[in-house]
Every structure is written in C-alpha cells, then in structure tokens.
Image (tube, rainbow, N blue to C red):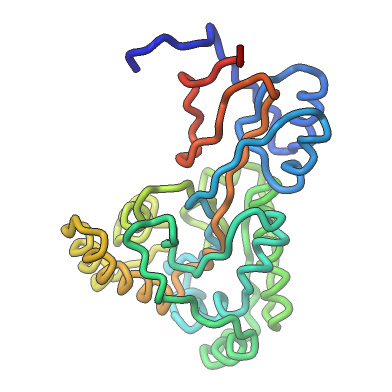
Length: 292
C-alpha cells in the first residue's frame, strides 16, 4: 500500500460461532479485537472495558426460496412467504434491532441509484394464506435451512415463527458451517448473509442475474436481465435510478426473496487499539495500530 505498516504481526484465531467465547478471550487478554461483534454481545462489550466501532451498511441476510424446487416455482407461493413476514420483527429478534428494515429487493438508501418510492409487498398474513391456498400449497411443509450461529440462526428462526403464525407448516433445519456452506446455493429454502456493495446493481449482477454462480434464488428472468444491463450502461445515478426502480419492483413482485433488514456492523476492541469498522466489512489491517 506504499506506507509503513504500524504492527509487526496480526494473528487470526478461530473461536467458532459462539460469541461468548470471544468475550471470555477478551477478558483473559487472549485477543485485542474481534473480527465482528453481533447481537446482544454488542451491549456486553462495554462492561468488560472494551469499545465498539460501528457503521451503517448494506450488509444483510436473505431468506430465499430456490425456484428450481417444485414448491417454489409458483410466484404466488413466493409472494405468500414474503407477505407473511414482518421485516421489523426479524430485525428486532434476529439482530437486536441494530440496523434498519429493508424491503425485500436488496436495494436500499445506501445505494445511490436506489428508488425509495418502491416499497415492499405489504405485510399481510391473511392475504399470504389466501395466496398459498390459491396455489394449492396450504398444507405443504416448508423446510427452512440456516447455519448454526447467532444472528443468522435467530433471524431465520423469526421468519419460521412468523410463517407458522400465518398458518404455514415449517420445519427448521440448522447446520454447522462446515456442512451448510457445501450446498448453500442449492437448498430449496434457506438463509444466507450478504456483505455490503456500493451499488445495488453490483449485488444484482452477482446474485440475481440469470445463470450467475451465486444466484441462489435460481431466478431466471430475461426482463430483469435486460433492465440490469440498461442500468449498468448509465453513469448518472439519477438517470440510473429510473431503471433501478423497475428492477426493485420486479424482484419484489416475483417474490424472489425475503430480505428483511440492513445490518449495522460492529467491531469490538481494546480501547488503546485503533481498528475502525469499515463499511466494506473486511478489516483494513494495514491501518491498524496501538494508540500512542
């Protein structure tokens, strides 16, 4: 990076997904900083004399049906799933309210091309059940997969609970990371975390465009592909927004995903360490150092 690095060495230690182990490591002076702090542990950190660095981001989670599965080929089923879930409840129960609600199309106010006039399908459990019955799927049992950790598991649990409240049958399957990531794009119904990208069109190109390797939704929509290509050809954000809004509406109307909230990111550290949380999530370790 063309500058002097202020630390001789940085060691990364894997304590697993239980953040209580992180707190114990901090109290035992085994570590100086956490890679990331989530959920209730953000509020515990000050009690051990540490500090939190935080930033609002486009990092998120999607709880998505895979459209290759027969159960989720009908958009009425997908719409019903989205309409049965209150995204604010997911934020509160899944991430301790430390973020802001989203609208199920993976575009938000942090993206310059975002069209805030486009909103989610309404939260309406009764209408959701009506759609599910219309599709002949009211008795189907949905198996919802997630990784076994803190916020991703908790958020997925909150979705499952709301789907059950709406009258749907839901089975939860929770897998260790070593198993979950082997097939993360293939589960018929599962949750996945996504990191911040500066533009919504970047995320859409990675995950929503037809045929992409990370298109875990298995969504194949030529109209969307054409709109995305048009949006990517426009440099001016205000002009691009006119097309991006159509992309948002199409993702919403097709019931592609439940994308419930945007995450604030937190990094906890000793008070004498300079290591701010960056919006891109990845640690900029060449800027880290102990304060004089």
